[in-house]
Image (cartoon, rainbow, N blue to C red; front, side, top):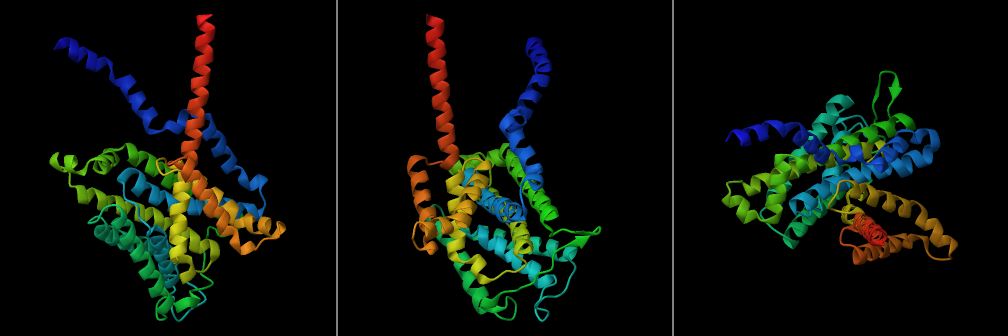
Length: 360
């Protein structure tokens, strides 16, 4: 007993270090530090178009897809209503805040309108999740898609609150401390900060007791229920967290474009978020941001590329679809899976060459 006790006393420092390394794997990853430095100095090397239309848009869409990745990757629940939740938050910012539609907007300051929008969008997503957790597999996808479609048609036809198909325009953005936070550089850093916080929150939760229990529910819900875990409560809590992340992205989206309309929450746009998450990789938090970058680059430059080839520029989504099919065909875990497989092959090749040299 004393030997075991002494062993336990001697182990904690190493154990704590190992846990810290497992919790924050990016700390010892040079590539992660390089990417972080590039993102921080991006305003020095990119003009306003690339800063906002490419990188800020990538971070916003990546944050939306991150909420879907958290549900699908750790909870096994594929939700197609994450863009709907983001759009709901955007509409609430426009309704409670200040916009060009004075007969609809209530005129609250942003520091009141944004928390209200986040709270209502999180509640909306949690209620939708409470319905979705009663189903599994394809039925979860269909019920969340139905919620997204219903919200799209409701906003398109409702004029009293959502201003119909016209939407709400000229949404006010924050001005405080003498800074216009919608100016290119301040807004980029706001988006970067929110995306980083959401990313590290997902990384932390995936290794926290809640995240580990959620992954257990994903793998074997019956066993987890037998162990005393409330399966549905864990799933609904996951929807609540994912809804809050999506709502943050929705607030940034409405500040970015200064308007929100039903086209922003269409069924096609909901599916785009799924494509972004799957193309990047749905098992790691970095995947949605990689998928978002690919999607934004294709959306921005594919049209001009097709026109130069003498094709209809409106068919740029064909390239997105073909790329999606190719990546899914070669890797079930998207670009992350392709990268991991390439690294494993490189390591095996290095091990074989090293073993051959040692044998000689």
